[in-house]
Amino acid sequence: MFADQMSEHDLICEIRSRQGGGTATRAISRDALIARGAPALADMLMRACLKYPELATELSCFEAIPRAVEHARTANTVPSVSPVKRDAASDPYMVGSCAAMQVVFHAIRRFATTDAPILVTGESGTGKELAARAIHERSSYAKGPFVAVNCAGLPASLIASELFGHEKGSFTGALARRIGRIEEAAGGTLFLDEIGDLPHELQANLLRFLQDRTIQRVGSNQNIRIDTRVVAATNVDLERAVVDGRFRQDLFFRLDVLRIHLPPLRAREGDVELLIRYFLTQAAREFGVDPAPSIEPGTMNGLKAYPWPGNVRELISKIRRAVVMAGDRAIAMSDFDLNGPSATLAPCRPAAAAEVRTAEPDQSDLAPDLATARARAERDAIADALQKSQFNVTRAARELGVSRVTMYKLMDRYNIQR
Image 1 (cartoon, rainbow, N blue to C red):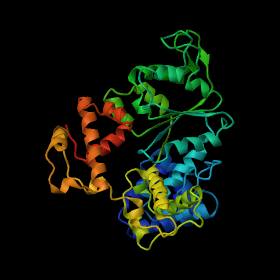
Image 2 (image 1 turned 180 degrees about the vertical axis):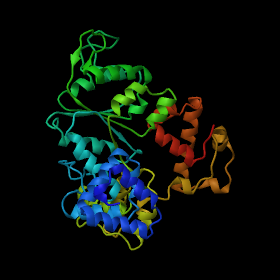
Image 3 (image 1 turned 90 degrees about the horizontal axis):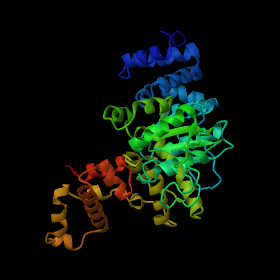
Image 4 (image 1 turned 90 degrees about the vertical axis):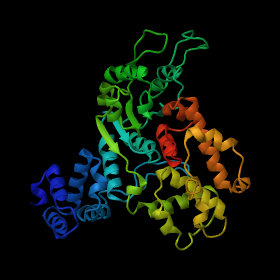
């Protein structure tokens, strides 16, 4: 079957049926390129992945896709860098050349021209806010403000006032009228980060705003109409949250009109070196290092083999650290501090945390290295927070100032279980 006779779904099914990388897979690549040309095939594959975001990484291993995407990119049909533009030299762009990121860039361009809500999903650190900013800057709301709200970082007692504003005297301490973040975003884009952590009692208020585009300030009965573009982001599985009763199904359907999934860095084959060299130049410029330092032989292979659990955010942080540590010499693997605490500590459980701290130290405990000491302190803090919250992970994460996903990763790192 030739590509010009296929729908996106047919093409996916055909490729999936020929998994294994044998001659049949290569035949699809050759037949499709002959029938439609590489740019047309790339466009079809991207449209398919827009409908089924989880396929972007899965399909990138097939010969047809990277070849088609590369051809399309060299033909100036698919950029490798998204349209996020900043004034500060140190501010990051969205950079990537793998097939999965080409799907993301294509979705940003396509969705930015609409007014429908967009849900951006992906692990912590994958660049969800950057994607939201790229959408804003390409939309008809670009001249208005971009207002970002971290739904997990607001105290539950104040989040209604923060989102919707309040009138003078509406509660103790309300000494003057204050507009909320939604009202601040009028004429621009409202970015609701960590939407999966929004308290259940406020989800109905947000749903009402999405339905009729009006809000009421706390302490007021007056409806205020707000025209703003809504982009929400989450690293939580909202479908599972709906099933568990933690997230309203009607709100989920209102937000999940258009979806963009950002792949984890470990799934972006070939992008790690591109990102390292890009952000190395940015960090050198930020810290006044000229020329940008080189990387010792063999270090790049080690960096590409590292799983980057914190994704692009971790990579940027480690690169900035390496530039500072290296000074005027070539950057070594040790400058990135990637071995971290998990490589030096034995697992523990929260019930044993107090015993770990109060037990008589053995000889090895008398002079721990810095990584070990840091890891012990981190492990103890996590165990304490979980005990104080009666193992409520959300409350413990809030107490420590981290996201719930990060909390689960730390619990897994130290094998902390109930």
